[in-house]
Length: 465
Image 1 (cartoon, rainbow, N blue to C red):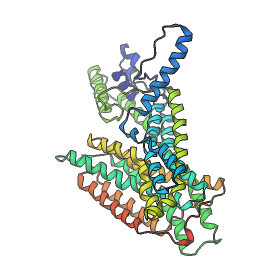
Image 2 (image 1 turned 45 degrees about the vertical axis):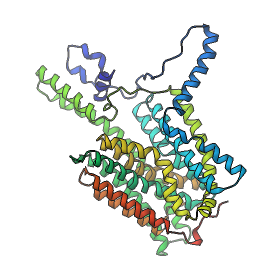
Image 3 (image 1 turned 135 degrees about the vertical axis):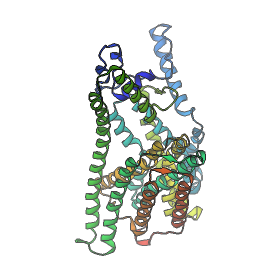
Image 4 (image 1 turned 180 degrees about the vertical axis):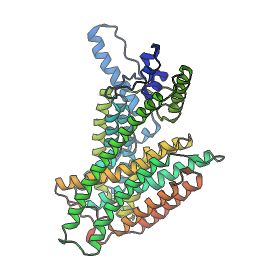
């Protein structure tokens, strides 16, 4: 199975391996068809008749699915914190405890939501898989933002999304580079800087969309006072969404062009049969080494079925929505109880919820010297939030008559601008070491300390409805 997967990644058709024509080996496959996936779980026995099978099978599948979803990872030990948050809110109304318990309870749910998305991707074609990852990749941040927006806490929405970008670019990426550098002290880790350059370009575009509404308001140069900034923000958000869709389309089509280029190079080879076989073998080996899905020593397969994945996506989204409601309602009280500014909670503490899974994954891949995947997790998530989640929140606010704009105040906008510049300069050489990761972590400490002493002016503070 692993050999056939390698051929499919190159666009080869495994059943044609017996053909005498070497050229037929590299005919490109039709990407519109999903490849059947085997699950790692054995199906229940069919013995006992249809009635017994129907009852026992459903119960066995349900137990196995729950066990796989909630008892296969140590992070799920935090799951009881969710019900405890609801209980504390009903019995004591201690908002500080409700906030912390809700925060801890959402962490495993966010990680399981990412897991369920990955399971469903196994059963889809690449295009649908990319759209699923784009939709559910930062679903936790989106759900929290929508609940906050519904209650009129627009500054909380802005600051929590900003914090997610800063956390991914400084904390997550910094820990990944530092962990990888410490593990591989004797060599300098390398990565594909062209992919990083494209993501940084999109991040700079997002910074531009934030700077212009802010400068327009600060300089008092609006054409229509009080409405021009909002109109410009909505226009920029639509442009950003279109740009992100084109970016996803470009990545998917560019991958197909890479496969087509292999075929074109093959057609220009000398027709010596031995040379052709050697070249095909080298392509397989190179693609196997470069591919994240083929780099594992073990064959990858889905843990649950397609319909189980869809059901778990719905159930986990519902659980996160319920806890997000408690979390958002407790923020103001938690700020008073813990004597911590709301800005610090929004920018520093809340992003820990959505970035817990990314944090662990990025470090794990960096330690395994798969730095391109680590950068894809950290920088890719930042790009997704800035170019997809942030503008979609503005558009949804437009639809429900909430005046959410991209005027993030000069302090927040300057912080994001400097963060993107620092990351761009650190990654421009295409190499990494532990000191570069340490620099990013120091920058995050400076940002955290800055927001700990930062308070919004009374005129723009949230008034929950």
